[in-house]
Length: 160
Image (tube, rainbow, N blue to C red; front, side):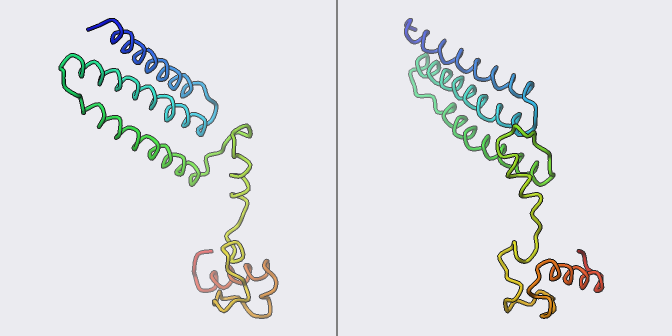
């Protein structure tokens, strides 16, 4: 193996190790769940990708054939890591895991929590032809309309 290939391999191995170290430190040191989720999904994905590129170059040069295993692993990693991170973040939102005020988007998350699911916020008008169980005498008042729906559900034994 020539010196320039060894230098190239060393570069990718060190780059991969550096990215993985930064991702691991971010996982341990960042203060909230959403920030901790970001560090491993970005940095360690790049780190493992760099190590796989180094492995692909090494085995391609030594065996004189193109190594496809590392390409398949890289494709699998780059597809599954963002999807799993998205699913964890979505689960955290549904479980209402609080974010710090310095987390980007924390204000939007709080606004979404404070919003209620009344017919008006779902895009359905109270005086439309859809029967929401609201008396026509209180159709103009959103607060009275939602109170009427809730009291009707409670009288019928339904959930609020």
